[in-house]
Structures are given as C-alpha cells and as structure tokens.
Image 1 (spheres, helix red, strand yellow):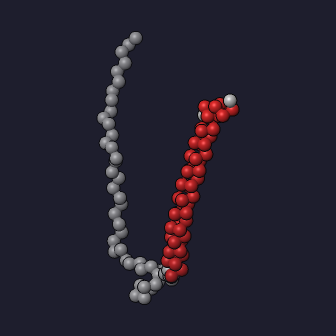
Image 2: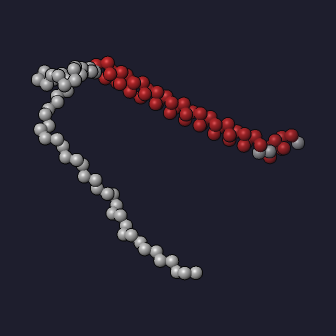
Length: 103
C-alpha cells in the first residue's frame, strides 16, 4: 500500500527538480565569479602599474617659461577678438492677427 502510493505521488519529483535547478544556478554563478575574479585582479594590477610609473608634469608659474617648456605660454593675440554673432536657432514665426467676431 505505501509503496504504490509513494510511486504515484509526484510531490517528491517536483522538489527534486527545484533542488537540481537551484544547484545549477548556484554553480553557474560561482563559475562566473571565478572567471571574472582573475580578470579583474589582472586589470587592477595593470592599472596599478600604469599609475605607479606615470609622472605628473609640473605647471610652474603661470605665464612664465615658454622656452623651457614649464608653465603656460601666453602669446599676444594682436587685435581683440570680435564679438560673437547671435544666431537664432529657429526663425521667429510671423505675427498672427486674431479677429474676434462679435457675439
């Protein structure tokens, strides 16, 4: 009696399906994390190496230098720049005259 009822009952099969599906999802997640971990570590090492070997240019005194390459070179622009021309994005629409009829 118990054996025949056990063989017909499907509740255990559904539980087994969910356990297998959950284990597959967890395994896939662990595989993704393991593959990304090594790549992220290598990328971090490459960035650290690049930043360690990088040098920062000194600005020097503003406006000084020029020949030596230090600072900012300010040249005489000659004549002043012209005022910018204002260009409308869209032409303005023509005026509209509204005539109301008497009520």
